[in-house]
Image 1: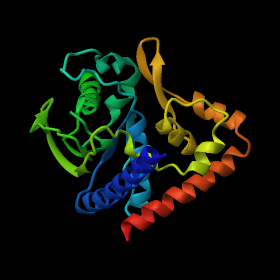
Image 2: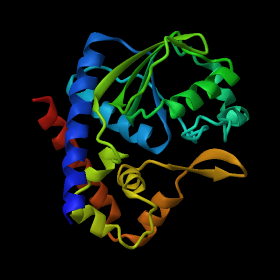
Image 3: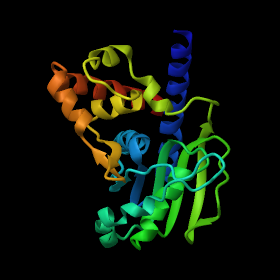
Image 4: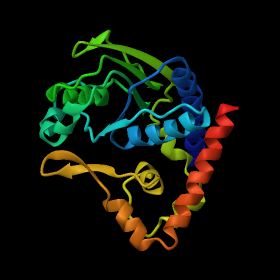
Amino acid sequence: MESNSKEKRIGHESLSAFVKVSAKVIQENQFDHIFAASDSGQLAAHILGLVYDELHIDRPPVVALPIFRHVDKERTVVFDNSVSSTQNQNLRSLRMGRCLFIDDEIWRGVTLRGFMDVLDSVGSLPESCTIVAEDGGFECPETMHGVPMRFISIKWRVPTVYNSFSHTIPDRFTRSLSAVEFANDKQRMCALLGLPVKQWNDGVPAFSYVLLERSIKNVPNFSELQQGYEKWLLAMVKDSLV
C-alpha cells in the first residue's frame, strides 16, 4: 500500500510538471505536428491537447505510431521499427515541419529513435524536433537522421518508476475496470480515454482497440465512467496550470 501511495505521489508530480513545462513550450513555440509514440506517447498527447485547449491555442495534428523499443540496455539492436513503413505510407503526404515529440519519460531515447526510423523509412522527416519528457540520463544528439534535435526536460525521473502518468488513476476508476484484464495501468488509462494500445500484428507493431471494445462490452456504464475520468483529468490539468 505504501509503495502504491508513493507511485501515485510521483505520478501526480510528473503529470503536473509535464503540464507546466509543456504549456511554457507551446506558448513560446509554434509546432506543425505533435509526435506521440505508443501508449505513453498517446496519453501525453491527450493531456497536451487539454493544455492547448486551456491556453486557447489551436492544436496541431498528432502523428501517433506504435513503436517498440528497438535496442536493449546495451544498445544491441533487437527490433527495427522501420519494418512498419509499409503500414505508414500515408505519412509521405504530410509536410511535418517543426515537430514536438512528447512522452512521460525519454529513458535513452530508443523509442524516439524508433519513431524517427519509421519517418526516415517513408521519407517524411521533420524540419526540426523538440522533445519534452522526463529525463533519466538522456544524451540528446544534435541531430538524428539529419534532423536538428532539442530536449527540454520536465524533471529528473525517479529511478525504477516508469509510466508515471498512469499511476495517477484514482482507485475508484481502477476498481470499476476489474472485469477487464489489462497488462498495466497505462492500458487502463488508454481505455478510459478511448485510445488504442500497441500490439503485435504478424510481427509488425500496430494499434488495437481490442481492450477498449472489451471495456465497452464488459464494464457497466463504461461511457459514464469515461466521462467521469475525463472530468477528473481536466481538473488535474487546470490545477497544474494555476
